[in-house]
Amino acid sequence: MSIRPIKSESQAIPTMEGAGVHLHRAFGFQDPTLADPFLLFDDFRNDDPAKYENGFPWHPHRGIETITYVLAGSVEHGDSLGNRGEMGAGDVQWMTAGRGIMHQEMPHGDADGKMHGFQLWANLPSSLKMTDPRYQDISSKDIPTVIDDDGTAARVIIGDFWGKTGPVDGVAAEPTFLDISVPPLTKKRFKIDTYKSAFAYIFAGSGTFRDASRPFGVLVEKEIAGEEVHLRDLSGDRTLVVFDKGDEITVQSGEQGMRFLLVSGKPIEEPVAWHGPIVMNTQEEIYQAMRDLRSGNFV
Image (tube, rainbow, N blue to C red):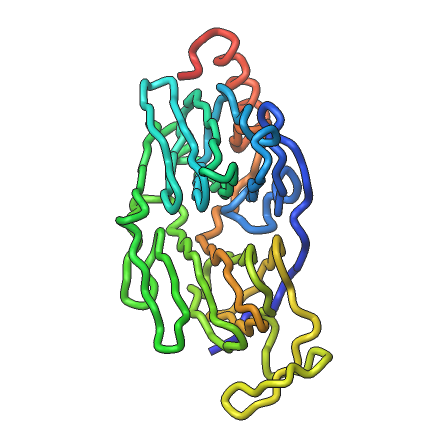
């Protein structure tokens, strides 16, 4: 077994999208090889409806898949194919845009005005760029949760993990998408396919993905399995960790525990031509998408 070293670690950056939605972007519109096949990851959460209620009005997508995971509040959506629906807390929508779709996403807060969700963009290989659009709307109750003896829990959205299989299927990048909660001061290892790119995104608590047997600063006055744990340099809320090659990661949670998304997928390793929510392989394909939009032939 080889522990994956950390390739990069960074904080999500505040930005604004749609019609004025305040969010934090962990990565996107930069180096498409950073987490290939994944292109963009946004964390949208706020307690002020004025900072999200105008949402993401009608806009196009082509050549990618968008994955929306809601933790609090809801997201009402509609598209050019006539689909309508609403995602609530714990629900997931995996949308394959393929050859093209127009859609909108309008977030709403819960009873306290709180809204929290994530959106991930996954690239499609050239062979599937112009495939038919497809939706997979997954209710929270259909997402399996597996709990280890030490209390570590994982929601399995897609992929196989600890004997459970997520309900999303037929996705080109063969991804795994997990929502993992690790109890306080707990050391864990998680296997990841050696040939997949992988990243983690911490959104509650703190911890480290570095080798927990190494000292990291101030001693926490507790022991785990008889070992002293040095954990000053913990990563916390809105931290993105991109991993290098290997077949497992190591996790050491802090005193408040840690909750994070663990995402991996098979790299596509193809040229990327990017124009906002339209991602193709060549600039000519981007120009064609723009012509299709202007002529009404996009969908």
